[in-house]
Image 1 (tube, one colour):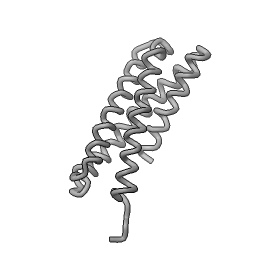
Image 2: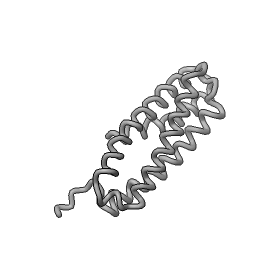
Image 3: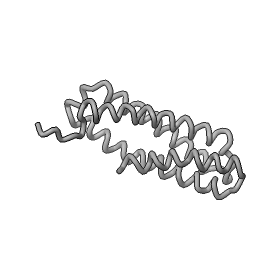
Length: 133
């Protein structure tokens, strides 16, 4: 669950950005600020658990897909944090278009890549899965 809530917030951010750009209601800009914060901060907390797995389990440390997943996740969280930081220092909606929306879409692309690699780790390499061995 530590991963799903930040991901949902960052994907939802695209919707709030689109709603703000389409309608101009400052509510959507404020909602986006909160979603950006939840996504960024929650993502960094979840990443701490991932780092513990990566560094403490020898089998996982040897997998290139684990290191690639970690690298992409850090890049994604850096973009999400930048997106949130830009919104924090601005008037509601001031930077939603084009910067906020662009960063939100780019972050979503990195989420998709990290999710695909995470799926490989779980379903192909059984990382975090009790196989009964």
